[in-house]
Image 1 (tube, one colour):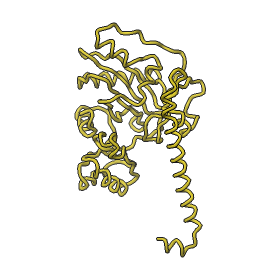
Image 2 (cartoon, one colour):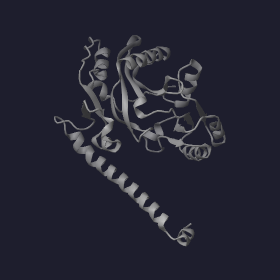
Image 3 (cartoon, helix red, strand yellow):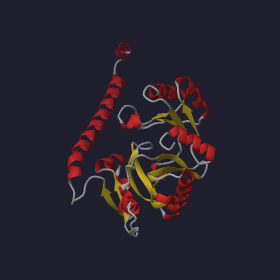
Length: 294
């Protein structure tokens, strides 16, 4: 149920969990359900395995019903079912995540709440930069998450992503993550909450280690190139920044990854330049030439 976005949405509605308004679409004839939602909407395959296998897009954004029908028809070619959610207003830094490990005897072994600072691509993508959430927010979201985990009796690693909804003045659940660890898991360890270590000690019956604390403001960035793409202003000036790949005492991950990242960044910028050049050329073409081309 937690892995399938449609089943989770149905469970959330039945149990009163805070989630965005959504419609579940299993075939193209059901795309009319989207009309009752407030646009823009985010359209996602309910099962992400096709996305992780590179066989389907992660999501699509539709600004109106015609875009939703077109995107839905394309997504349903590779996905058996879609969830179409009303997009929750607000910047990326109003998105929070609660990472956890829940072990034997319904014990929540470790938990860490972080806040996104930026995403790639903005508004819908994976975490580019993040930091620990403020204590009052952590308390609120960890209480919600513990209650949720007790209700479903989940065991293992996981996380729940939340976003502050300015219209309803509450946090809503964007999605849970199970069956895999989250992209930004290291941010917890860097902030003094080593979730994998605590899980290991718990499962072997060892005493828990006292969580470390730091007075530093820790920011985790997925990569230096991600930070270049979102802009340096996403990181507070008083922060200590840790890169997802580069460490002085362990440089090999960066040596392997960063040439690929550089090629990807150069390719995306070249593609934008080509699109811009094509648009300018069409704008300056004689009317008869544009007409002929069309």
